[in-house]
Image (tube, rainbow, N blue to C red):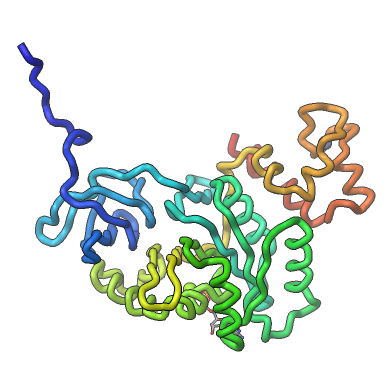
Amino acid sequence: MAKLKHPRESDRKPALRGLVVGAHGRHFHVELASGERIEAHRRGKKGDVVVGDVVGCTNPTSGVAAIETIEPRRSLLYRSDEWRVKALAANIDQTAIVFAARPTFNPWFIWRALLAAHEAGIEAFVVRNKTDLEDPEGRAAAQCRLLASIGHDVVEISAEASPDDARKNLLSRMEGRSTLLVGQSGMGKSTILNLLIPHAAAHTQAFSEALDLGRQTTTASRWYHTEEDGWSGAIVDTPGFQEFGLAHLTLDDALAAMPDIAAYASGCRFFNCRHLHEPGCSVKSALESGKIDPARYAFYERLAEEIDRRS
Ligand SMILES: Nc1nc2c(ncn2[C@@H]2O[C@H](COP(=O)(O)OP(=O)(O)O)[C@@H](O)[C@H]2O)c(=O)[nH]1
Ligand SMILES: [Mg+2]
Ligand SMILES: [Zn+2]
């Protein structure tokens, strides 16, 4: 006798398939192949759907669909805080890390974002915006030189004072790709988004109205496709945050993404040297003889502390 097979959730083929273009807590906006956007919730307490996910959902009942499945991701970028790891976006090709001379930027934010991208296996480039502004003590310019010396791609723009040049420089890196914008607040991410995808502001408003977010609109993440913008690609905008926690990394992961330090890590007396307090450490010697930037080493030490605190 044939065994009776009960349908399980995973056997049912979801009625609709779409891209998560807006995410706010457990509320989502899903864009279907037809271009139609529907509101969707995730069943249960699962906090696993992020902007950029391709999902399967039910047909909407009273206007809201249920997300049932998440398709395998090409990439997933995380950050973490003291309490938990948070996925920022799925299926992005690269991240653009934006900073500017003003408001005062924190280099550690940039360096942390570079490490998170490396860990997620996605490319990253750094954007110095607002080159029209004075650069107190040449901090922003010095940061560009340091990043370039480490091997990072850095582009210098003024999204407001030289928008045409800014557009050209950014699009040479963003054409045909999906790019997540990250940076401390006030650096110019929204300005860049609106420069490259002018209808983005209108979509932001539509999304907030549909989900009734009101003033919480800045806490939602969104995926914007180009439409008639003269290029093809996507930009992902996530809520601003000041800390880019990396507690989900190991110290080896961190070192692998810091070639300026890793370059000196092969001559240590102990094969498992962590380059902190061990005798005969070639990283420490390189630091003492000025071959490693002290600020970069201080950053490495801080990461080691954070990672130890977690484990
Ligand atoms: N001087 C100057 N100001 C800019 C430039 N780009 C953005 N801004 C200003 O910086 C402020 C913050 O920009 P915004 O795009 O909201 O930053 P976000 O918080 O990173 O999204 C706004 O007042 C912008 O007008 C620029 O290239 N030059
Ligand atoms: Mg913004
Ligand atoms: Zn060492």
